Image (cartoon, rainbow, N blue to C red):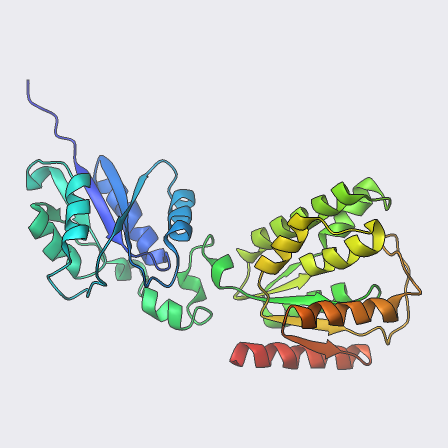
Length: 329
């Protein structure tokens, strides 16, 4: 009986970040071989940590084996010396069979040389044939310019986040929607409104945590649909303020997560507009004091912010100018 040959291959890359060109190459390789392993080339100086890159690949290609190989030295894509660590790692992954049974896929010039050293067959793949031409280096230099080259799962890592922040009834939701429309991108509503509409205004510490987690989950989901900038109506610092005011305490988880999440700009809305009541508002007479607490929280965390005040048209123009300055900076 003739032996059935299993065609095994490795896709090698830094994936720093994962691009649509990489996605095309991996899909091509997955259709070319019977068994595929994605190898993440890891170095101490990588711009994106390996854990995050692996998480992108796992989500994009469920069921495909993913391995990390640490290289002792930073490689040069046009060089033939890749260090013993990388070659040893690849030899452990590829089977000890003939070149007709093992294959190497790589977008860089080193792929062909590596295949020769490994006794494997190099399979060229040119994503430019279907319009994918942007490199990792170009994306790192200007992610917003090359936004379409990023898979949806990678976009939250590079999106510029703007939080509209301030007391109740200061036009935050309206402003966030207006800005998203103006800049042609996505808007993240305040999850607390959804939660309170379902569960009522009487909330405790468990409710505050549910609202905070919901805000994070909603923001990270919408970030994938953004066009490089994301406008957020609320954040976890907002949850800290409301937890302290309504519950009298702030859970440790909430403080820790608030410190981890990054925003490129806060738009702090002043209370110099008429109060309008609705089903989600609590403290109509405390706007000045709440505003002062907002300033304190932003200053203590060294967050970048611009105050937004005046009439509605003036507020919008001030906000647009602040965002444009942030994008140019």
